[in-house]
Amino acid sequence: MSPHPTTVEPWVVAVDGGGSKTDVAVLGLRTGTVLGRHRGPGCSHHSMGIPAAVEVIAAAVTAALTAAGVAASEVVHAGCYLTAIDLDDEQTALHDALSVLPWACTSLVVENDVFALLRAGTDSPDAAVVVCGTGINGAAVRADGAVSRIVALGHTSGDWGGASGLAEEVLWHAARAEDGRGEPTALRDALLSWTGRTSVYDVILAVHRGELSVSTWWARTPEIFALAHESDPVATALVLRQGDEIGVLAGSLLEGVGLEAAAVPVVLGGGIGASGDPLLLGGARRALAVRAPSAVLSIVTAAPITGAIELARAGALSTSGTAPR
Image (cartoon, rainbow, N blue to C red; front, side, top):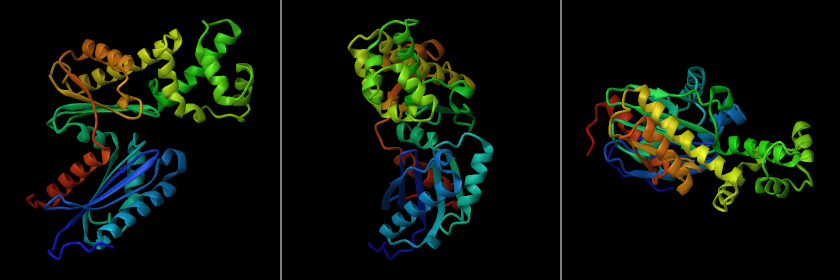
């Protein structure tokens, strides 16, 4: 354990909790100095339930506090930016569950992790963010506090794409390629390679019977992009459509806060979004230009925890009235 400085310093906890990892930082309120960090496993309450998600977050925070030599009672504010908080009741339930913990009981903010990614990508008060990873989500903010969001519950809420959506599309196109309803595509052979099956028919039955899960193919998304760059027409169409969806989402979010005519940053993150694929980015920029011609799309290069740190410290300062140094 590394003891923190002997001067009295209120401490802040920042959490960026995603589906695959939970990053925590412990920082000084006045100086902003990060004294302790920890990375734990993913904490999506959609996949594990709220009690288990809270356990993961609590363990990661405890480890970061231990690394910093900071007691939970010394924490004056915690900012938790977590995946899959898209409904008010989810936000309330997670806030209630976390607020009883000793490091969160003084002051706590619980929000969707898109806001951490937004602040990791830009400090502009007028901006938008699109996250394209397992699924797709986004938000736009305006300097006066107005926010535009989507529900982000997948196909049910009008979303398209992300690794989960692309995996479903691969199966759909492979099925049609095999039975003649669709055009031939190398995605069919790729799917058979992923599953070890000899026909798409066998894959379809295995998925239907619960013997195979489409989620096991989410990590294969880079292979879809590779086939697109090898000029497979179906794979190319999927990548271009994903880019178009990113641009359309960003434009609609900006329209939601009246910034569609403004020269504002749109930051793009997530495993797919941050890939830098030229087909994807070209499609995204073309679609964005139709809805918000002056907006500027860029990829987030900083880790989302940096945005969570900025937001958590700002929240603590606004609550305490402490002046930064």
